[in-house]
Image (cartoon, rainbow, N blue to C red; front, side, top):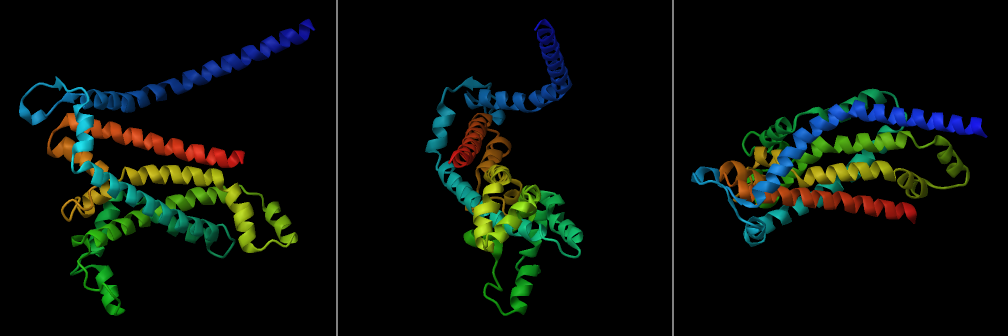
Length: 305
């Protein structure tokens, strides 16, 4: 008994030592991450409670909750929130459906599969601003490729000034965003498909399950963890979209394509209002955390059921 107790104590000591060594190894990374993320977050929270307009020449003064109250009284914030939420829902739905279809196709065995996979994933490697400028030129009403193809095929909207109308501008932004980010969804879901055992599908075929029943009863439930990761990342990324809007429309025409991140950028860099900009930043962080928590809660409840 004493020997077993000593062996148990020795094993516990080794585990504790390994744990401490692991903490020591990750400590530099944690410090760097805290320096990069914690300081700006704390600074934004501090700014959000200040009257801090840089160009005014006045020192920051305590504002209490005035900047947060301004969020709900500003005639721009709530419409911009609606724009952002609508774009997020539509873009995530489109990218998830198309990404899942791509993942299912790329998971099949066919000749040249490796080359096709590489080609599909190329858009995700293109920097966002570059892809946004590319799509902006494609939607140019005079020299753009989109109008040229529509005219050649005698299709509707062949002479559309895409970025001058509200709905057409949103369509152009959605196309640019989906082209670049759908491959990311496909990558994540393809990784999830790769770890599903083939024996399960063989058993389903033996039991006479059709393709749709196999997809809904086997593939989707087993793909849930990968789907959760893809949805969380894409929802947060779409909700915080900035660069595509900045490069393609600048929030126009008028303010019809304004999103929250663009409104935040304007507060900081156009109006130099660090107090209001800090409040918008904090609101964005809180909303993003709530979205992520909602996804985790939904997927965990489904697993329990």
